[in-house]
Structures are given as C-alpha cells and as structure tokens.
Image (cartoon, rainbow, N blue to C red; front, side, top):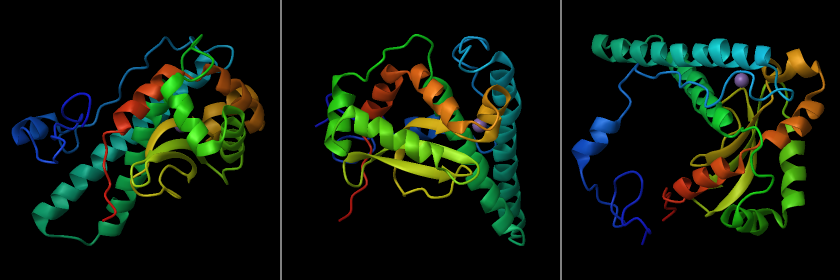
Length: 234
Ligand code: MN
C-alpha cells in the first residue's frame, strides 16, 4: 500500500485507474513539449560550469531536442493520417533520440544545485548500500561509467522497477544501451557540449567537479516517485 493511498500516476494500488479523464488531461499533447526554464540563473553553477556553457547547453542544445521531438511526433501523426509509413524508420529514430534527449536534460538541470547537501538522505543512502555496497563504491562506479562512455552520452543512476533496486547504466547518444523500464534519477551529461568550453578534452576533471554540484535532495525525490512504478515480470 502506498503511503499516499494511490501512486503518482493516478492508479489505485490495485492497478485500476481512479480517474481516466484526469490521466488523459495530464498527458502532454502530441507535438506539445516545451523547454522548461532552468531552476537557477545561468551563472549559478560557476565556476564548475560557466555561464557560457550553461546558456548554450540549455538555450540551444536542449531547445533543439524539444523542437525536434515535437517535429517527429507531428510527422508521425501526419503519417498516420495519410496512411503513409514510407519514412517510419526515420521518424521512429528521431522520436527515440530527441525524446530521450529532452527527458535526460530535464533531469540533468534539476540534479544540480549550488551549495546542496553533500550526501544523499537516509532513504537514498540505504538503497545505494543495498545496490552497490557503500557510497564510495557507488561513486567510483558511477564516475567511471560516465567517464568511459564511448563517444557522446550519459552516465545514469536508475531505479529499475523490474528488480526493485538501483543500478548504474551508460547511455550512448541519448537512447542507446538502455534497459527497458529503468527510470533515471541521476544523470551526468558527457557530451562534449557539456564540458568542452570549460574543460576542453578533460572529461574526468569535469565529472569530478560536477559531482560537487549534485542536488541529492532532487535525486532522493526522484527515487521516491520512481518507487511507484511497477513492471511485473509475471
Ligand atoms: Mn547535453
């Protein structure tokens, strides 16, 4: 039984929708994604991340993913309407790439905060110990995985509802190497656009500095919400 009586998707603990119309009303319209503003000023993460990097990253790169996600969704709607699936592989690829890019950037912005808590809260700490042994072992694996991404991608701490524990994944580009059902709660952007202006080719130096910005309160909030997801294997 959820402490809230129902989970955050509006489903009762027996899996029945409480109010289907509410769920439909809350859905993002097709082609209606919007770029959320940064939760802090553009210079708030200096000196770790410069105002120049953050401005370009949010206003140009992230906006591009939002725009192209909307474009793909509208193109697929038009294809359905016309009954024309000639470009289906192209648009499905666009949907996965830009949709994943939009989601991961939204998480990345909120995962950072200047002067946040240095350690996770008690619940997240317990889950980290269960999955990785202790906090240092977790940090070492997360930063090593992030640093070792081949080409452009992400390091990701995810809650996997299928096995009920945390795990660390890599993403190449935004959408490759995922494990279905895994819900990202902490993400490190290791595309060169995230660090090249400030750190040149020194990805690991960026990651070690980035670690000091992690907003552990946000990571724990995301874990508590992710716990409501269910992915039954039987
Ligand atoms: Mn990025």
